[in-house]
Amino acid sequence: MADQDVLKNVGPRLRQLRLEREATLSDLAEETGISLSTLSRLESGQRKPTLELLLPLARAHRVALDELVDAPDTGDPRIRSKPVTRHGRTFISLTRRPGGLQSFKMVLPTVDDAAHPTLQTHEGYEWLYVLNGRLRLILGSRDMVLEPGEVVEFDTRTPHWIGNPGP
Image 1 (cartoon, helix red, strand yellow):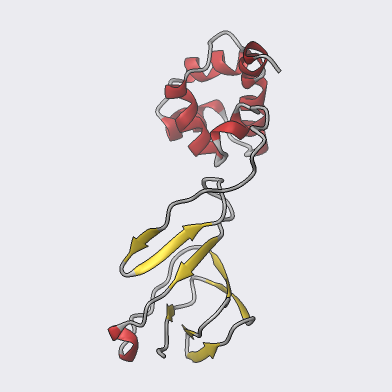
Image 2 (cartoon, rainbow, N blue to C red):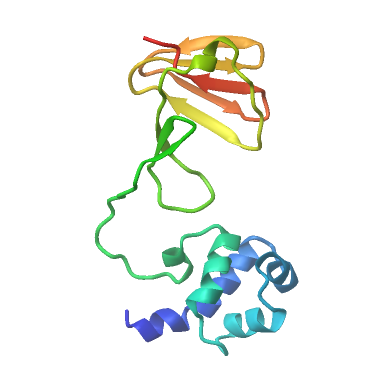
């Protein structure tokens, strides 16, 4: 597919994604900061898409930029993510898509606050699969230790804490 064909198909793709979300042009303009007239011209093909316009649209539609423009496959499906460490925990992304369902490998060190964990809540749902070691999960009033091969699934609005129980 030629580059011009890819760009020509962006307008209809933007419209399709917006309609799938049941959003109006006004909704999208408010969410992205892009003017209503610019969005309309993009969808109708009267304006050429630029990276400056496509990045906020990809975020709003929760799709990767490649998916937004329906770019041809690059041929290499491998994910080469860099580990990120936050609060002593290492996260390795196993998915490429921004937003939507995400998958991470987490490496949890033994922590000092395990004796007095602080339970958290947030929007979402979590699925945990223990690859090796042990995982302590406090979920509401339940306190459990999971072994390799065990899986849990829970609504993250339930107060919870996840940590390494030790040796």
